[in-house]
Length: 339
Ligand code: UFG
Image 1 (cartoon, rainbow, N blue to C red):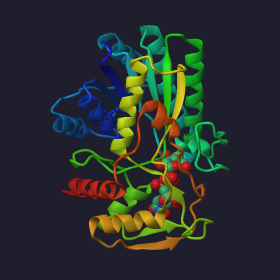
Image 2 (tube, protein in one colour):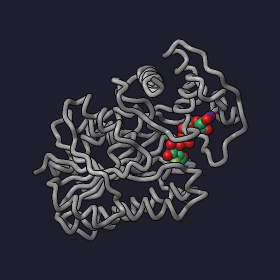
Image 3 (cartoon, rainbow, N blue to C red):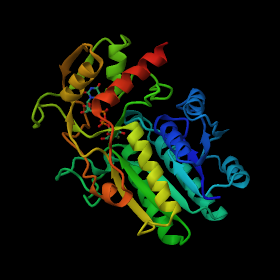
C-alpha cells in the first residue's frame, strides 16, 4: 500500500499522460474511466509506452455503487481525479449536465475516501478560476474571479468542496493543481488529445488544419492590447504537466505537505501569443498553416500566465520541454491518429 494510485479519467488526455509518468516513477496505477470522451486506445498506448498494463475499470465516478466496488477491491491511498467534462461552450448550453457530472463525481470520490480511509487526493483545477486577472502573472494568492461559464464554476466549486472536506476530515489531504493551457502529446505519439468534433482549443485546431481536416484556422482577435494584438496564454506541455502530478502525489504520500489543502499553478511562467504559437508550429514542423484573423471570441481573456514560484520551490517541479518539441509532438500525434 502507498505506491498505488487511483486515476479517474485515466483514459483521457491529461490522465493518460499522468498514468505513464506514475508508472515510470514506480507507482501502480488503477484507471477508472467511463470512456464518455476517451477510448481504450489510450490504455493500450500507456501499456506500450511503459511495458506495464495498468488495471482498467470501466465505470462512471457518479455511480456510487460501482465506485464502492472499486474502493472495496483495490488498495490505493491516493486518488487523482481527472474525470470531468471540459467543453466551455457546451457547459453554457447544458449547465445541469456539467454541474451533475463534475461535482457529483468528485463528491462521490471524496465520500468514499472518508469511508474507506484513503488519504490523498489531487484535483484537476484550471487557470480559468483566475478569470480576467488584474495582475499578471497570477500567483496562487491572486483572487479568483466569478466564473464566466458553468464549466469554470465547477472548477471553483470543486476546489471549495475539497478545501472544506480537508478541513472537516483530519485524515484527508488534498492538492488542487491549476493547469494553464495543456498542449502537445507524448513523444512516442502513442497517446495524445482526441477532441470529438470541431476542436475548441487552439493546438488541436492547428494540427487538424495542417492535416487538411479543417480548411483554415481563425485567429480570434488581433486588436488586443498585447505586443502583437493576439491573446497571451501559458502553454504547458502535457508531459511536464503529468510530471507535476507525480511530484504532488509524492508530496502527499510522504506527508511533506505543509497544510493539508494546497493549491499550485502548473504552467511555464511564459506568456506566448496566438501568432507566436502559430509561427512556432510552422517552424517546428517545416510547414505552412492556412490561417486568417477573425473577430474576438466571446469569453476570451486578453492574457493569463502563471507565476510558478510555488510549484518550483515546494514541489521542486518546473516545466522543461521546449515549445518547439511540444509542437512537433502535437503534429506527430495528429499524423498518428490519421493513419
Ligand atoms: N484561439 C484561436 N483560434 C482557435 C482557438 C483558439 O485564435 O481556433 C485562441 C483563443 O482566442 C485564445 C487561445 O487561442 O486566445 C487559446 O485558446 P484555447 O481555446 O486553446 O484555450 P483557452 O485559453 O481559451 O481555454 C483555456 C482552457 C479551458 C478554460 C479556458 C477558460 O483550455 O479549459 O481556458 O479561460 F476553461
